[in-house]
Length: 262
Image (cartoon, rainbow, N blue to C red; front, side):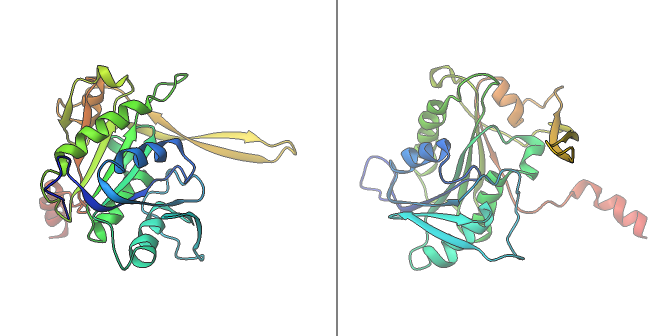
């Protein structure tokens, strides 16, 4: 519950998860943010990098949990596995009031959301009845990741969001622009952009024994974006905040499908 007597909104427990792994730098940023708002900060994160795993659950192999310290656990599994293990096992007697997924190194915008383990960790939390926020920090190639931008503006965002009780179905996808914290122009409500991924390419290579192996690469698209899109917000040096939901029904196409089936 929120402590209304203190100046800053306060929760009993915040759970942290990510897809970059328990030793990732972005997780330290989330811990710094969460510690400002919670009596207890719990970490249940993948033991290794799980980027691109989306909503995957480990249904065909056992899940192992290794404790790394007080309220800190590594899961040999996916971000969604981490949420399930936290809510149904590790924290079952006192579930978290909020889940923060991230801070991911790299933006999760537009089509990226379909593949993102960071966003899926947050969405899995909502499916378990716990509100969640996914944090992602954009960065520029050959430049340091501006983690301080996520720390400062993530704290500002939670100050506003936690001023009232959070609905259980709240899932926010938050992206911080790849600029210094003082250069951010604001925090903007946004919609999911479109067609950030033009294609998924295959990069074939040979190992030292002459046997082939392959890397998958995203072919990114530029082009025009709607003024209220997440991509445009970052182009405008603003933090994007996109509400998400589990329902992926394409309502506009239902009449066409009905006509075809008739």
